[in-house]
Length: 406
Image 1 (cartoon, rainbow, N blue to C red):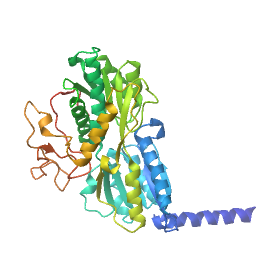
Image 2 (image 1 turned 90 degrees about the horizontal axis):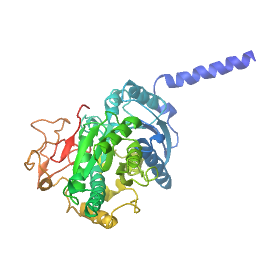
Image 3 (image 1 turned 120 degrees about the vertical axis):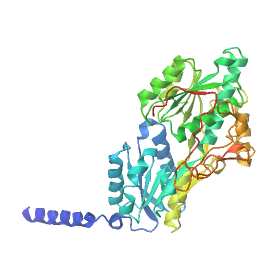
Image 4 (image 1 turned 90 degrees about the vertical axis):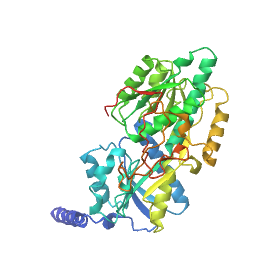
């Protein structure tokens, strides 16, 4: 027994030395057609929303890659904070031999960037963010999608329902009020609820919106409380840019309607939730991982939209949707695809009573400056053209911000 213990200790010491130097090559798969990928998540699958959508993308991409003869070994880490624990998680994934590390939350990127220079042979990806598109490093990347297209369509679905309620005498035109649960007053959220509102108003001219920010991407209780408060203030339609399903269940409990994000929420709120939109992350994961395995460059700043399958709508809840909704969705999707519809058409909204004629995008350093790109031209604000992450921060007329503390 003593000799066995000494041998075991020696083996353990050797194993520890093999990894002590931080070389990702030691733990990386030896099969050239197998790639080890880290996925760092702000939540877990139980949110049935944001992180669940990433896990769905992970699993779908795995099957697509397998069909191409590429095997993926995933290292998935859940419930990572937007703090130093994210730094640690990136280091852990690197030390575990991940050749690609994907960070799935907006607030992860600063902590990811603390690590990337120590592991120049590892590809680091920040989803929904922007700094890695401009930092000059070869091993950092950003990825997002034109989710504002899907939000516009969800808004159309909501607007058609509101207009039906007006036409049937259930509400007066001025009572067509949408309540929107937003995580933060960031460009991504502002872009999303503005495109949603413009979609709704395109089919229900009297609609207005109230936005409540909760100061968290994923706080089920706060999201529910905000939705309930909005309903109590007279909002007859609830939507959200937050990670959980609780705005849907809150809407149903108040007898109002709902549209969701990241996942089909009709299962938890069949009498309220009309439709959802989501990014299909399988599209990006497949392209990025395949490029890596083939020795090709992963795009520095990736962005695709609905016509590429990167933005999708969930199944329409036909039981409660307004008549003609499915046909209208098809019409809008076609108009987005052929370019005849510009979501942020400046003739469809005003800012302080005036048409928007000038607004900055970003400069090449990722900042809003006097040298930034002009985003308004040809009669529209061109979202996500100069970088994948949204930069629409304009507060348009018809949308009331109930708070802006976050």
